[in-house]
Length: 256
Ligand code: BTN
Image: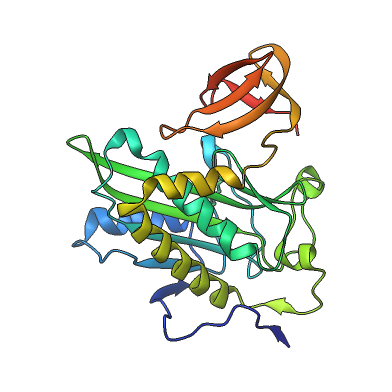
C-alpha cells in the first residue's frame, strides 16, 4: 500500500526517470554540454545516485529506491548575477510549502536546507551557468528523504525523512512528491519574475532559529546572537550585542 497524500493531477510534469546515475545534476550538466538546448522545467529523477553531490563538495547520501533525488533545468535570465540568491530562496520556499501541510515544524535553514523538528529532511544544490553578468541556466538539484527510516550512524541524529516525521506506516510515492514539488516550484518561479520581494519576505518568515538567541561559530569564536533575516544578496543578518552583523556562508556556522 502506498501513502497517496501527494496526488499527481492534470498539472503533471514531464519527468525523465532513470534507474541509476552518478548524480542527476551531473547528468543534466553533461546532457546540456553535448546536445541541443532542453526545454525549461526539464526534470531528471533517479531511483539511485552513485555519486550524489552536496554543498561545499560534500557527498549526498541517499538509500537507493527510497528517496527523492532529482534535478530541474531553469533559465532564469531575468535575474542579474547579484540577485541569484533569490532563486535559491524561491526553491527553498517551494520545498517548505510542499512539506508544511503535513509537517508543521518545517523550517528553512539558511541558505537552503530544509529542516523538520531540528533535523535535515532536504538539501538543495543549485549550479548556475553565467553569461554576460546574467544567469544563463540553472540546474536545481533537490534531495529529499522520503521513505528512508535508517541512516548511517554519522547522520542518524541529524537526518529525518517524510516517513519518520509523519510516523507514516505506508511509503510515500516518490514520483507523486516530485510532481507536486515541481508544480509548487513553477508557481513560485512565476512569482519570482514579478514579486521577488514577496518571495524573499516569505522565505524570511519561515527561517530556522529566527529571532531566537542561539550560538554560532564565527572564525574561532562562539557568539550568541539572533538571526534577523536574509538579505537579497544572500547575506545573513544576525543581531549580536545590539548590533546588526552581516555574514556570508563561509563566515558563520550553526552549532546545531
Ligand atoms: C546539500 O544539502 O548539501 C545539497 C544536497 C543536494 C542533493 C541533490 S540530490 C539530486 C541532485 N543531484 C546531486 O548530485 N545533488 C543534488
